[in-house]
Amino acid sequence: MEILFKEFNSTSENNLIAFLDSNINSDYFYARGFERAGYLLYETWVGKEEREEDNTSIDCIVYPIYMCYRQAIELWCKKLIRTNNRTVKTGHIIKDIHNYLVENNNYPDGLKKSLIDNKNFIEYLNEIDPFFDRFRYDTTIKQQRQNNKNELDLKGMVEGFQQSCAVLEKIWDHVSENELHKDGFVQDNHYKRIFK
Image (cartoon, rainbow, N blue to C red; front, side):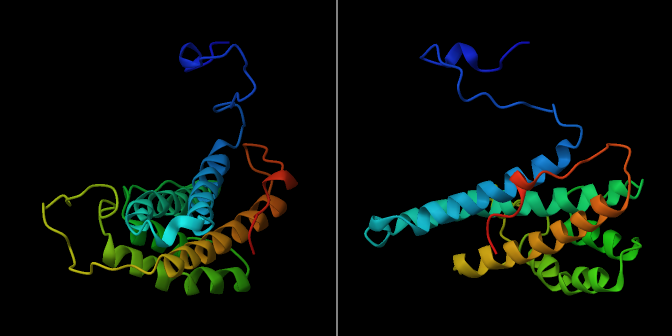
């Protein structure tokens, strides 16, 4: 088996090998990977002792944190849609993806309510970043920002994303426990949520 990037490893040790697409249920690992990366970036920045002296660090780190969490939300939603043997062609418009999930599910009432309650955060994301480019590029598709808001509460953003991911993961837990899917997913406790 070919190991990607091995030729750039300056040592002969292969102790950090990641297995790509080896899991039958790789979308779960993609979503969890982006979610966890966003969390770890945020926690690393919060834990920096010198962060108050380095005011620009928060201005730089907000973009990859947002991108990781936003990608996780999209992947969770699309995974849940696919588990119902459906496909949806919405591109990256998060509101459309989430709305489709809300309107086309057979979850228990408690989970449906959580999904509907999650809609406020999703609509907010859509309002500030409708084309998923506000935090990805320094200009938008139309070359001008869609809004003129120049400040962001990083803690509020991360908490909103964590709550939204928790809702979607709770639904995934329900789906994976109560239905036998073609992908044969078996949940591993190693990948359970690391934050409350």
